[in-house]
Length: 222
Image (cartoon, rainbow, N blue to C red; front, side, top):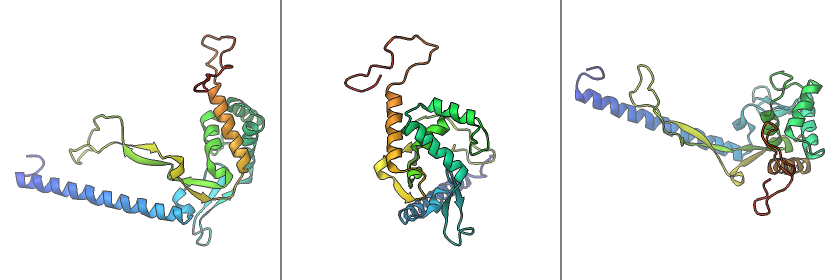
């Protein structure tokens, strides 16, 4: 026998594995509750690393008070992105081209921007002074597949988990230094919705005279 010398040994190993899973679940739940209470108190610790435009200052560096500190060079680029979309009503692709041409640096120091990065900046409520906690939660994955067990570990494969979105009315907002006002942030969200509803397919496909210019009366999509 490879696992236990007797059936009783196998049963003991199974019970020990179940107890370990139970203890792990209790620890995770305590951590989750602790973060939730800290977020309700307005503690920035639960957010961890700061988004582009900010620097995270920990408790030791901040004399017992963690906070976000503005990085002015990055903050200027964030403000430019919101101005381009909220005021000038340009697309995310055009924002990327202008940032690349200007040589603006990303968080990693690169001068080539990704459209997804620009979109994430425009959707982040922290830039209007309200950093959101609890936007996602862990849940069972919708994809069911076999997971190979670890070497020298339990024969039972670990369950797969995925992050699912939480409704915005359930988010907990923590005050941080704003980079743009709420009016500009709202204008950028409206333009993102407008860009999406009037999205034109790639020029590699067929083009029509009124394609992307007429919207459906019922759903508002192009």
